[in-house]
Length: 64
Image (cartoon, rainbow, N blue to C red; front, side, top):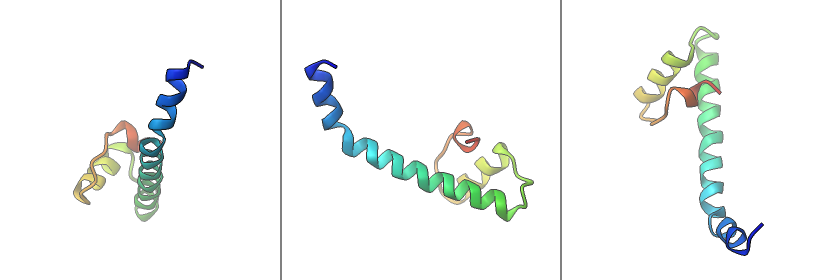
């Protein structure tokens, strides 16, 4: 790894940690929505439900 790459990695660690925490919260919410609807909701409906709850997400993000 180059020196500049190493320092860039260190400098962006807080942003990466924030994105990972947000992703974990989103996944938990997606799983909750899926369970609330007894597994009947797929990605399009989950995406719509997230948007109705005020969450901004992509449809591909609600598939994982």
